[in-house]
Amino acid sequence: MLACAALVLTGCKDESADFGGGQTGETETGYLSLSGLDVDVADYAEEITSGTGAEAEVAAASSRAAGATSDAPDDYRVRIRSVKTGEESVYTYADLKLPENQRIPLAPGAYVVSAESPDHADYMAGEARADWERPVYYGSVTKNVIKRTETAVNDLVCTLANIKTTVTLTQDLQELFMSDADAEASGREPLSVTLSVDDARLVFDRAAADAGRAGYFKATGGTNTVKIVLSGAYNKAAADEEPEYVSVNWTKEITGCKAGQWRKVSIGVLNADQGNVQFQVTVESWVYDQKVEVDVMQLYPFGEETVPDEDVSDEGAPEVALDGADIADGYAIDGSMYDELLGKWNENLKVVFTPSDGAAVRSVEMRFDSDNAAFLDALDAAGVRERTVALWPENAEIAAYAVTREAGTGVVTATVKDAGMSALYGFAGTHTIRFAAADDRGRTSYTVLEIRVTDGSAVADGPSVVWTDRAGTKTYDFATRYDHNAVEIVIDVTTQSAFTGFTVDIVSESVLPPSELEGVGLTDHLDLVNPGIYKTQLENLGFPTGDAVTGSRRVSFDITGFMDLLTLLNREGNCDFRLTVTDASGTTTKTIQLHVVK
Image (cartoon, rainbow, N blue to C red; front, side, top):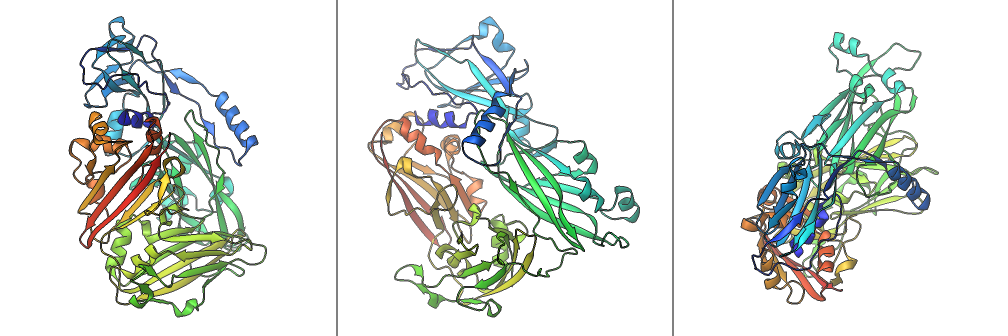
């Protein structure tokens, strides 16, 4: 039941699985009826409208209603896979329209019925993770086959399985950059926008942007970050002066990108005044899916607004200060600041960003440097690109290490949590943080904070394990038992060396006893480093396995979906997940304690 329900959640069209029988070990045959099967492809786009509330929901619903699906081509592949054994049969959609294939005998159990575009499997398994004009589609449902019973599979909708991107460059922006012909003649870089997901990238030149060419990225995780890099030879001179071109390379990121979304990136000029330019990046999101999620359309101005690229603060830009100290003097961290008895830091670094009257802090970025190579290696291993981290607006990726808040006065504070203080203390030396703080009027300040760490060492033995909600704004206490439907479970685990062990023990006699787990091919002791036969089941439930654990110094996973599975079991009682993580410094054990209610 558990594995079957897990796979229901991964499909692009939800259907309730039939738990009416089976799973008894008997081998009498059941049947999968495909006589009513219609495989459709979603060829509509639903706009994520700006704003929230009833008005936005009505607009989104209207957009969906205007959409349509079309019958899948005959060469679409349909797979029928056993959840328990992993064995599968593959047909073309045309094959399943033949009378002899519309009633398939199967052993009782749970089966995933999926449909996909012809190149979906090769594309998802291949090394190429970005391509032009190559959408792939996928959809699935899970059915339970019961002995001597026909289980029907009817509608199956395939939706976009990768991330679609397009780029638009406004005419006023293009006029500020050297023409392509002049750039080629002078050996300068022509105007272009590079979009990338991890190390997969596509370059949109003027022609690609003007033609509306679409690039598609493989979604390597549940959520992905699309990085935008605007490059070219920019004319920094005023309109009445001779052109003076400088090479620019501005970057910004779009977080939270998922498969099935169309990210429409439009770049224009918000203002241009005597060499001070603010580029406005508008990201309009559309979703190919049955589910409409209403979100706020956001503006992403580039952080580097002074041309040429110099750290010169604008007049009236946000002021950056330390709470209770002079930022010019830096900040010192040593072992005397840590209370070993309480296991907490008695002083936490706090930075304050104060905008001018009437303005608001729009964004804050931190760029790290250090005289300790191990510190920089740790940043690189954690996936911190160009050693630059967005601090404001709130960034879920660093929520385990720092908390940011905005007061009613517009002042933004960033306080390093105990986990962040410990991470800094683990590396002796001098670390520098360059804050780029911009307000909503296009003014940016640049401030450097020097952090000196003495007696650097790991504060505690073993990796750090933190439990937060999906937004990263709430941290849960491992010592507290929570109702299973009242929490989100996002686990972030970090090590300064490498993970050597990572196990999960499921402790529950009334909800998930060993006998129940064994019946669906699971066990109450799971090894994420060496998952063995449980690899597929673990990954379906949201856990990383194998190289995804040992090949990184930071592992994050979201098993919130597990809560829906526990609800489907319709049982009540305690259910604990004990995490045991080991690295070179020792072992950390944390237990997620839940009470499951019907």
